[in-house]
Length: 476
Image 1 (cartoon, rainbow, N blue to C red):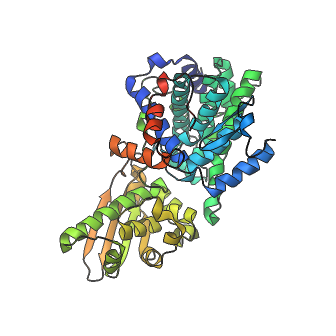
Image 2 (cartoon, rainbow, N blue to C red):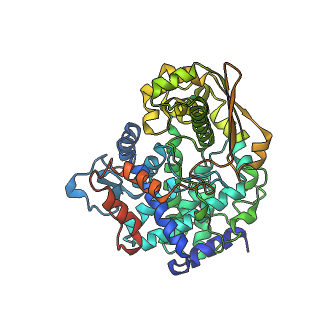
Image 3 (tube, helix red, strand yellow):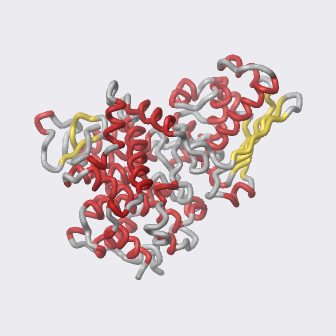
């Protein structure tokens, strides 16, 4: 039996009652985190423009009049009063999910699978009239699939070939989740996954010139995954050996051979949904360890100098005494956040979100990294721009060897008088090794849900945490 078929059998056979209680609870928390950060992007101008474009392409208006809200085949979009065709709604929600760079990450596969699989499962659940419990079970299937596909590819080999795992692996998670909701047979699930694989795509070329199409990657994965599942139900077949085929197999085409056994290893015993990092900072995860390191050094300075940095002007005085900031990290993190011109000389929000030098400079000057640190005026702040020019990022073999088990770095700040401050971060905050507290997780959800449901944040959090008992999904 192929490893893909073993995965398909797991998806087909698993029931809600078979899931460990911790997995059930985690599924609800993952949904809350993803839906809330997607809601936080509900007014993003790029997504608003994309809605209109997709409305034209899908044959519907960008806004459906209230009288047509129950139009057959149309489903909701988070933070939007109108409804859209199934795949279009999933695409829009996936764009929202990936916009703020706050969606969770599975470090062993380098995937933000939730950004596509939760939107696709949500839209499909609403379309089919399924329950909250059905939705959560599909979400678990999606997580187990996308994460294992990413591990099968091999993180470094897949990324170093230019592939964006969130997209290339995400389409499998979407197909798995929707296949579960459609109650497909094992053979049909195999075909759905095979068809997802033949559409697997998404590369990092956007990073070179700061193109804004990154959010299209999970959106395309969501739509393709949904379509693969529905086509499998209609009788179209997909290649069972999509990964290991000698002619066109993905493990050869998109990696260095990979490890096909990762698709089925530990199924039903090890739940990868439990191994998710929750992002505290709204930027590329590869910059988080450096942010943690510079914030730790900031505290060291305060203690050694006997002062408290109360505000940015006080931090700027210290900056004048800094000669250089050295950051040693893993190769993938270096390539992704410290090589392109946008990384080294950020001018836009997207540049800043993928710039370790910028993230470090903003963290030192402001004492935190939140949404406000990625406002356009902050990105172009002369003080930030001046400090980031002092940041040098280098790949270090020691951290590269530890990756992807650990996404770490070493931060060193050298002062004009030769004094040095150092901090080493093995795992960034929000990781499985250093998880955010429940209080922090709830605060994060409340902050971003306030964008679409001001005054109803707590009620919405409660609804999302109790999806298991709901007969239908709530309107966000």
